[in-house]
Length: 366
Image (cartoon, rainbow, N blue to C red; front, side, top):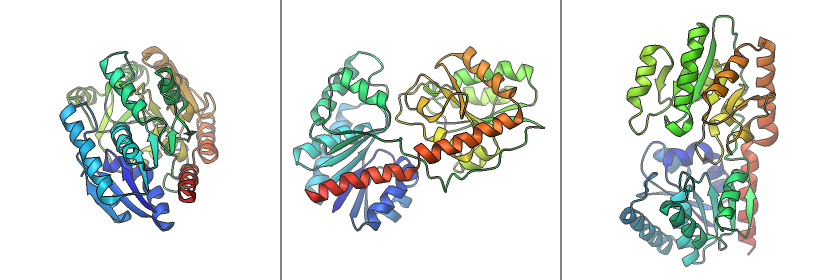
C-alpha cells in the first residue's frame, strides 16, 4: 500500500513514531511523509520513501494560511493517490481528514491532544467543533491517547465510528532503558522537561521550588526545554536567583533523567499523553504529576509509581515534593522500579504499533 503520513512537526513525528515508520517500511508499504522542514526532517527522510516539505503552522489559526494548507493537502492527494492516510495533531487531522473524506481515502487519525480550542465556549471552540464534525464518521479509525479527549468531543456532539484507545505514543523501552537509582546522600535532584509554557505548570513549579529551596539546601530543580512566547527572560531570572537550574533545550534528555531522583510535571496543558512522564518512568524514576488532568494522570499510580498533585495548586505541589524528599531512600527506589514495570505492562510502544498494523490490515483486506 501507499501510505501518506501528515504531521505538523518533523521532530514530533520522528521521536515518538520512528519505530512505526520503520515497521511500515519493513512490511513492504510505500511511505510518504508530509511535514514542515525543521529538526529531524532529514532523519524522517532517511526512513521513508519520500518526504514532502509542507507549510504547517503548529500554533494559531490564520484563515489564509490554513486555507493554503487545505489546498496543499488537496494537491498532495491528487498527485500521490495514497491508499491510506495517517495523520497526527490538530491541523493535519482536520484538514487532511477533510481532503481524505473528499477523495474517499481511508485514514487513521491520531488525536495527540485537543489544544486550547475546547478550553472555553467561544468562537474558536465552535469552529473546531464544526471542523471535527466534518471529518467524523468517514475515518477508518480514530486513535485517542486518553479517554478525556473522546469525552470532550462527544460533549460537543462529535461522535466516531471506530474510536480506539491507545497508550499515547507508547515508550521505546530499549531506548529509554532502566537505570540504577542514584544516591541521595549529597543532593536530591528533581527534573522538569517540557516546552516552557504557563500551561505546563512552570510557574507552579517555580513558586514551590522557591519555598523548598529556603528549607532544603540539598535539593536541586533542573529545568530542560525550549522557551516559548517570551518565557526565556523569567526562566533565566529564576536561574540567576538559584531557584532552578536551567539547561535550555537538550537533545539527550535520558542523561538528565538518569541523574534525577524524580520527574516533576505539573502540567494542565490539554495533551494526548505526556511522553516525558512515560520516558522518566521507563528510566525507573518516580513521577510527580497532575492527578486531575487526562494525559498525565494515566501515567502514574499515586503512591506506587509516583505522586499525584492537583493542577494549578502550588501548595499541593509543594506538599508532594516535601513528602517525596522525606521518603526513605529505599521507598524512592521502589517507586522507580514500579514505574518501570508499569511502562512494560501498559505503555510499551509495540502496543501502539500493533494497533496501527491491525487497522492497516483491515484496509488492505477491503
